[in-house]
Length: 405
Image 1: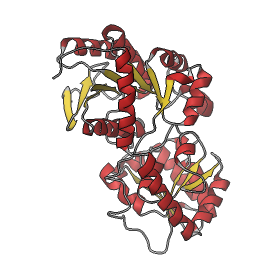
Image 2: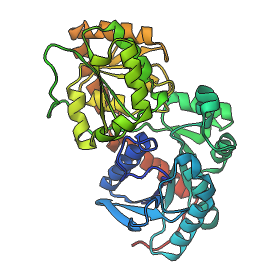
Image 3: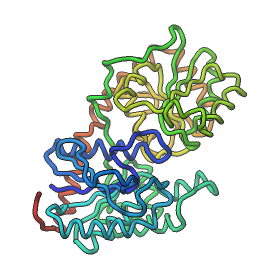
C-alpha cells in the first residue's frame, strides 16, 4: 500500500529530547520503517521549519520525509501551529492530485495532523486513520491553567473522532477517555506502539558507573508532567542510590535550561544533590547503553498517553517502577515486569524503589519477564502488521486511485 503519515510537528528526522520532540517522533519513525520493511511505500509529511531543508529527504529504504510549506519556515512551538493546518491540508490536496504519488490511506498523528488530513481527505477521498498520542481532556485535567493548548482543542478532537475512518488508540485507558468524549467504541481499535528490538536488547555496550552504587535511571523530555520532582524526592528513601536523568537539551545547554536548574535546586534542598545527575540529550543509538547500566528504570509522569521508555527498558532486561497512569497500566504488569505506584506520590515511589533495589532476585525476575513480554506483544513488526490490516479495511471502504511513483 501507499501510506501517508501526517505528523505536523513531530518529524521522524528530529533530534529527540526537546520540548516538542519525544515519543511521537520516535513512534512515527519506527512505525514508518517497520511498514516499509513489510513492503509498503511510506511518505511522512511534516511541517518545514527551516528554509534550507529539502522538500523530500529519504529516511530509509521505502520511507521518504516530505517537508510541507505551511506557515513560516522556522521553528514554532506545536501549540502555535493550529493557524497553519488548513494550509498544510490544502498543500496535501495539490500534492496528491498533481503529483505521481497518491496514498491509499493517510495516518494522522496528533489532533492537528488530523485536521490537515481531514481537509485533504475532503477533496481527494483518501481515507484517514488517526492516532491522537495525547488528548486535550487529559491534559486539561492534569495541567489546568498551565495547559497551553489552543482554544477549541477538545472540541476539534471530539469532531475528529467522528469524522475520521478509524481511531487508533494505544491503550485501554485511552479508549475509555475517548468514549467519555463521545467517540463510539466500535470506531476505535487498540494498536500499541512497538520497540526496536535490534537497538534495545540485553546484550551490548554499557555506560560505566560507580562500583557499589545502585543506579536509578529516568529517561524523557525535561517537562514538569514527567514527574522528575517526585523521583528526586523519592531518592531520600534510597540513600545509597544515584539517579541519572537522560533527556532534555544537549549537556552543553543544560546550565541555561530553567527546568534543569529547578531540578538541581530541588535535589540540593532534599539533600540528594550529589546523587542526581542530569546528562542531557542522549543520541538514540547510545540510549540502550544507559538502560543496560541501570538497576531499575523509573518513570513517574502525572499522566502518560502511552510511554515508550518502559518498553525500551524492558527490551533491555531492566525492571521498571512506574506511575499507574494511562498506557503504563497496560505495558507494565504490576508484580511481574515491574511495580506500579500512585502518581504524584514520592513516598510510595521511594518505598517501591527501595524494596526493588534491596531484592536482586526480584529485579532479575522482573527483567526476564519484561523481555519476554516485549518479544510477545510489543515488536514493531507486530504493530505494523496490525495497522496494515486497519489500513486495508478502511481503504476497502473508500478506494482511491492514482499513479504510483
